[in-house]
Length: 101
Image (cartoon, rainbow, N blue to C red):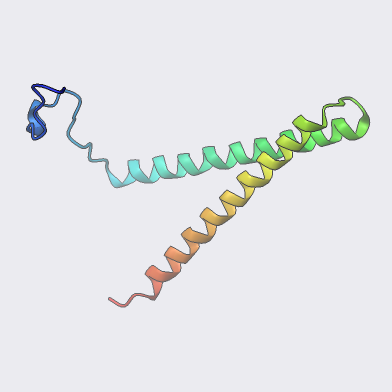
């Protein structure tokens, strides 16, 4: 049985809830561009790792085809996700540009 639980406790009484931080436009722009840059470099690193794993397999340096195939699939999925995010961003931008003020 559950006792002494107040489901409608005021927000001020909640210890872990903080007020939202309002960032300036330049900070938001920098953080968004930094996020994009970081994620794109991770996708690039994954592509490079998959290419080197495939090259090692072709040269006979490794015999573990499972790890090579996993690296290739991971790189493929990351690239597909990146492309779909890019397409959604472009669609959103185009939709905003079509709106009349």
